[in-house]
Image 1 (cartoon, helix red, strand yellow):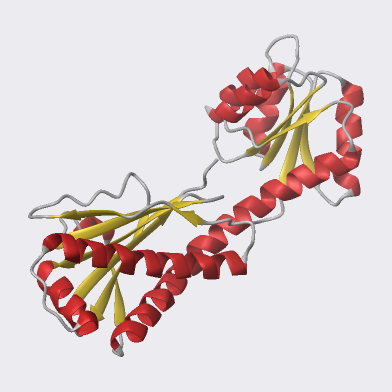
Image 2 (tube, rainbow, N blue to C red; image 1 turned 90 degrees about the horizontal axis):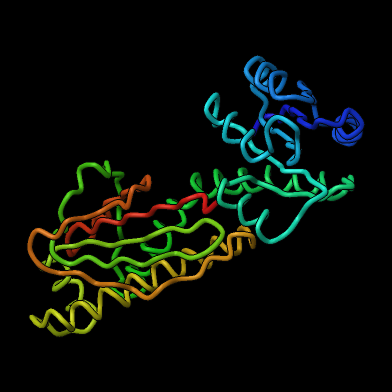
Amino acid sequence: MKEPRFMIVDDSPFSVTLIEKMLQANGYNVVAKATNKNDMIKMFTEEKPDFVTMDLTMPEINGFESIKLLRTIDTNFKSVMISSLKDDELTEESKKLKINGYIQKPVKEDELINTIKSIINYDKNYYELLDEHQAVFKESFADAVNSMTRTTVSFKEKNAEEVKFSMGFAVAIGIIGTFPGRFFLDMSNETLTAFTKSITGQESEDSEEKAHFISEFANIVVGNACSLLNLTDKNYKFRLSSPTVFYGEELTVSTANLKTFMIVAKTEFGEIIIGTSFSRGE
């Protein structure tokens, strides 16, 4: 993330000066200040800051309304609400509006700076997760296949839009944590039958038995991958929901309105599709 540029909105010139000094003392760049609605709109439009500290109680417009108004101009900014008032109702409203932080006056420098750093690190952690998670899931999948069958795997990326229907057996597992996500595996009945036989030594035509197998295999893959990610960054705090297995003809594959990363694993038993997605969780 680039060095953030700050805008301070508060109807009290004293508070504006105080917050500005705190930010500047910690190396942050204050590019705009406003004490009323008109100046707020003008300065925000001209400077397009990355962060806005917002006073909750102002004569013309309150802080929540101000955030909504500024988002009609540009949505690409982080916000910290600052007010002498703080209760459950106000903090809940702040969360509903996806305001990134809430600080009570009098503003303490360490609380303000720690809140800002936490917001910056949250963004940094999310984009690092998107960059690294595919490699981790590939490693976990390949290790699981090799450990169970003594065979190797190769991978290629696949466009998520190309995957509309399941090949026959699919399992989905929810990922719970700072950045909630979803993992799924999809393979044909023939691939699953051959895969199961290579491990158990028996060829089963029982769909329930195969469903249990793919469920456990997927649980191992995603569990090991999330364990590796948790070791990389303890802030992820990933945990898993119970697997859900689907099988049948022409099952629709839904990406749940999330950007889904698709990989095709080429195994000795056939192709297996791996899908992963994560959201910001804000």
